[in-house]
Image (cartoon, rainbow, N blue to C red; front, side, top):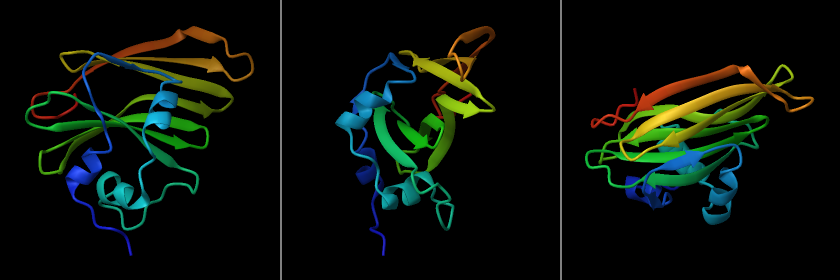
Length: 162
């Protein structure tokens, strides 16, 4: 029988951090030394609440990174999800009561077809996200500048990520 948590239990695992913040390939080391992985009950209740059973691999781990400080009408949390050859930073926004508003993968490292795909993100004080993506071959780790792409996202006052 899984423990039933209240939303503040989940949020308390994410230390509040002021912006700006940059998340890259190795930033998770800081979070994994300072924050304990999320329990299965927290994951199933707040990350996968609509799924009867969590379909993550046996070795999938979720590390709480931080809560974006000073949001008024919503709560914004970032966690790191580690799977085999797939690592993602996820930004999720919730109402103050704990209902999911929006969720988006904002940075990642993925290995597919012999190539390493990476995205790094900077979140500024206005809650704008600048995501820079690129690819390198897995053999030599040389970055291919022609694969670079920049995306711009923003966390709106409603908590939506657009």
